[in-house]
Each structure stands twice: as C-alpha cells, then as structure tokens.
Image (cartoon, rainbow, N blue to C red):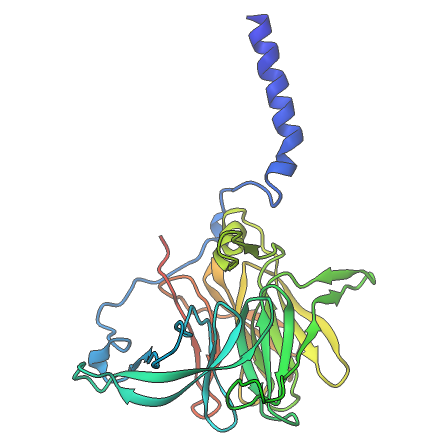
Length: 327
C-alpha cells in the first residue's frame, strides 16, 4: 500500500511539473458568470437573411473553362475598392476579385448569382482576414489584418495577375506594439480592421496572445485552434490597436477583450466599435468629445457569439456578424 501511495504521489508531482509544458496556454476553466455571454433568444420571425426576404443575394464562383481550382475558398471578409469592385481574400492568401455577375443558370431565382473570380495578387505566406481599401491615401492601397503576420498593406494592384504586370509589394506595417515599460509585445492574431475616414488611422484587433497554428498535412492555418483555446481557458488577452500611417506608430487603445474580433469606425470617426467574441458584447471606444479615450460596453444582447463588424457611412448604421448561437 505504501509503495502504491508513493507512486501516486510521484506521478502527481511529475504531472504538476510537466503541466506548463503540456498545456502551454493553461488548462480549461469554469468561466465566471459575469464573463459569460448574456444572449437573447433567436427570433424565428426574422427572415431578413433568407432569400425569400428579397434582401439577400447568394454569390457563387463561376469556375471558368481551363481554371485549375476554385478561388473562392474560405473568404473571411468582403472588401470594395474606390471603383466599387468586390474582392475577397482566401485561405491561400490570394486576393481575388469578383466581377461579371450573372443569374445562376437553372436557378430561376434572381437572388442566386454567379461571379467570375480572378486572382489579383498573392498576399504572402500568412492568413489574411479583415481588410479595407484606403480611400484617403495615394494610390490603390489595401490594408489587411493577417492572423500570422500582423497588419499589412498592398498598393497599386493590377486588374488581373499576369506575368507581364508589375508585381505589387506587400508591406508588413505592424507585427509588434511597444508597451509603457518600453518592452515590445507581439501582434499574434491580427483579425479585423477599419480605417478612419478623417485621419486615415487604421484601427485593428489583435484577437489573442495565442499564435495561429498550422496544419502540417495541408499547410493551411487553423484559425479555430487559437479561438477555442482563448475561449476555454477563460483569459481575455485580446486588444484593440491603432496604426498611424503618418508616423508608422502603433498604440494600444483597449485590452482585456475575450477574443477581440470585428472592428468598425463610424462615419465621423468619433468612435470605434469592436466585438468581444466570448462574452458576446460590442464595446465602444470614444475617439473624440468629452468621453475621448473611454470605453463603454453597449447594452445590446445578441443571439450568439460575435464576429466581424462594419458601419455604413451612408446609412449611419453599424452591423455585426453572428456566425453561431451559444451552445
């Protein structure tokens, strides 16, 4: 009996010593009630995202003859340039334009269309997520948040990628941010961004301090891995950051976010909204006025976890994406 107890004690001690190496980001925990998302019930009468509502259009890629493989692969965000051309960034880090929209053959429904997908540029070895074209800057520049690289930019894009066209250069703008004590903190999971219409400042989220993992069999980046770990360990390591193009400086606007995700600036650049995925909330950071520098949680309740965000400068409305309900 004494030998058995001794073995159990030794094993327990070994496990405690090895635990930090086995669970690099900490164990799963019971999330405190005050940090659990307060959600509303799903409203079954809301049909605005159904084709029958007449407000939704489904867009499929029209694979052209001789095309080797589809290009519309796991896009995270839709972006438009100054001429109204639609683009997506796929899981292979390709910037793809969508043009020549046609009603899908045989569908009999004008809400279901196909589009010609054209590779415009290679955005590097990372995984681009959110992005936006800078309409104030010189040239045709797309800023994008890359979950692997950080905040990046590509300018002077051709209409179509070809051997004869000059290759646009991807610029890495921010992969770390300086802390108050003078040390540097890496941007491990740049997620979404929004560009201020007045200053041209780029507000972007750093979702978690957990780096994005890569599937060694496919070479693709596993975005869900970091997200799930951030959720189950109960830590709030997400941040809202700001990049100033005029100086190249990055500063921290907000911390303590449960997977910082969508970012959206209003039309007057008086505030920036950002979503905290795992507590199901939208927060408002005031950029000007009496409340400048303050953070105000909105009292809105949503029927699920939150993802991307955007504000319409024309309508003055802001939107958030809800990919799933809370289990």
